[in-house]
Structures are given as C-alpha cells and as structure tokens.
Length: 420
Image 1 (cartoon, rainbow, N blue to C red):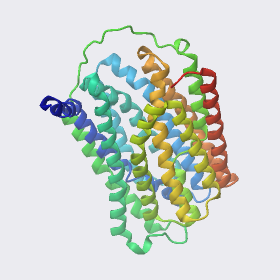
Image 2 (image 1 turned 90 degrees about the vertical axis):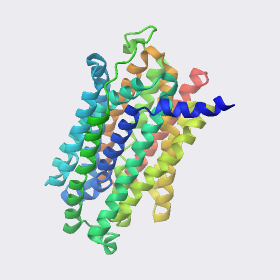
Image 3 (image 1 turned 45 degrees about the vertical axis):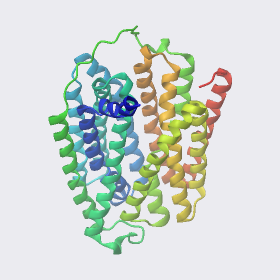
Image 4 (image 1 turned 180 degrees about the vertical axis):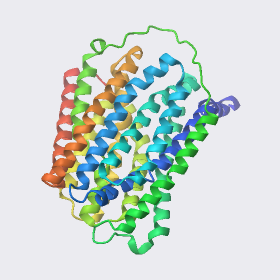
C-alpha cells in the first residue's frame, strides 16, 4: 500500500519536469500579456474605425490571425524535427509575439492593428508545434497527458490574470464612474487608457521570453521503434477526410469570440470594465467545462459528444440572434463555455481515433490547416454580414452552419456504424 500511495507523487514529478514547468510559466506570462489586450480590441477598433465599422475590422483581424497561426503550425513542427532544434523556434515565436502585441499601442489606423495581429500570430504559429513537441520530448509516454494538462492549466491561468490586471489598472485610471462607458461610444480618454495598457503588456511578454531563454533545455529524444509512414493525404482513412470536411463546415460558422465582446458593447452599451469581466467569465467557463467534457467523451464516445456540443453552439447563436436582456446574454455566455468543453478535446481525440500513430502528425496538421483556412472567411464574412445586414442575422447564419455540420457528423456516424 505504501508503494501505491507514492506512485501518484512519482507520476507528478515525472510529468512536471523542469522543461514542462518553464514552458508552462512561459505560456502563463504570454497569455497574461495577450489577454490584457485582446478583450479591449473590439472597443479599440471602434475608436479607430468609426466609418467602416469595428465588426469588419474585428472579422478581418481575427480571420487573418487565426489562419496565419493554423497554417504555420503545420510547417513549424516539421522544421523542428528536421533541425532537431525546437528551442530556437519556440523562442523566436514567443519573441515575435511579445514585441508585436504591445506595438498595437502605437496604431493610428485600423489596418495597423490587423498587421500587428498578423505578426503576433506568426509568432504563435512558429512556437506551438515545436513547444508541444518539446514537452513530449521532456517526459516519457506514460506521463505526457498530465504534462500537457499542466501546461494548459498554466495557459488558462494567464488568460484570467491578464484581464483581471487590465481591469484593475483601468479602474485606477478611469474610476468607477466610467464602468459602463459613455453613451455606447469610445471616448478619447478611454482610447488613451487602452494605449497605455497595451504598452504595459510588454512587461509580462518580456518576462516570458526571459524565463524560456534561461530555463528551457534542448532535448534530444530517444529513437522510437515502429513503422514510420510517409503521411501522404491519399494514405489517410476516408473517414478522417470526411470528418475534416465536416469540421471545416462548422468552422465556417464559428466566428471569433471577439464578436461577443463587440455585441455586448453595441447591444447594451457596455464599456471597458464589463467587457473585460465578460472575457474573464468566458475563460473561466471554458476551464470549468473542459475536464468534464473530456471525461464524458471517453465514456460515451467522441462523436456523440461533438454533435451535442455543435448543437449547443447552434442554439447559443440562435439565442444571441434574439437576446434582449443582459442576464440572458450572460447565461448564453456560460453555455458557450459548455460548448468549448464538449468539443475541443473530443475533436482532437477523434482525430487520433481515425488514424494510426504513424500518421497522426500529418492528420493533426491537416486538421488545423483546414480549420485555419476556414477561419478567415468565417470571421471576415461574419463581420461583413454584421455591417451589411445586422449582427442578429450574422449569428443566425452561424447557427445554421453549425446545425448542418452536426447533421453531417451524425450522417458519418450512421454510415460508419462503428463506435467512437
């Protein structure tokens, strides 16, 4: 019994090695920096672009950003495998992002923000795959799940600390009297406060790079036995290809979460503080539902859980299309976290279920690439529909696409006839 009681401690020590801890701290400080900025960008766009409209620029910015990151993830991991130097790519990625984000404080026009978000996401695309590979290299196969879970927990912690810090600094700067904004508009004082805050975000970003530069060690992974595989598209299972097509359809209706902030601003006239609280609540909701969603997907199967999550997403977007009360908006936000918890882990787990181990790297690259290619038109068209027809119609279109994707995945389950 004494050995059994010690085993979990050994497991924790084996999973959270020095590299894992340092990479976790790097992600914490990076998200600390980025989430001081992200929840304020819709309001910042509203102040920079009153003529064309913030929705268009939010859509363009997020579409370009996510597409860039997703496409680069495919290649950065392969490059790190060939060079056998993951740390240099990780540092380059974090460094680019840490410099690009705070530079938004200097933006005079909306397209300046779009360009800087592009470079921010170039950094994310460079670092993500090599970083995850470095985590895997640093621990043995039996402890990688805990190592990755610890890293995600550190990441989410930074995503909560950043907005909390921004809210505290803005409270000191603007005071409680500006809690709700002024007539739904963005004042010159608020614009100046946001610029100062964006500049302050440089500090945790620099700390992240310094921690990684000093603490991360390059690991030479032991050679693994087993068949390799060329990982060509034609060799991947047909079920996987159909799944990617269905996920791409869903992604076309899955616009950026930034639109939720912009919607709260336009619908209820919320100012800086409520929007930051909204962003914090969204992240907390994601954290709360993520682990239960993974447990349910392990017990009931991946596809039923994903289908349920997509249906919930469609219902949430339908709710957003008709919402009129603030309490209902907050309720929909909590449910939005439930959708994330049900689908994020289950989708990635389903990718591994569809393909053999020798093809998983290629499969994940195609999966992320497909979502990335859909991200640009998804957010850009959502912003165009928002400006041309109205946000309620835009949310309704997103709900329809999510519903069609749920039907498509249900059909795949029926044709497949296999348990997930």
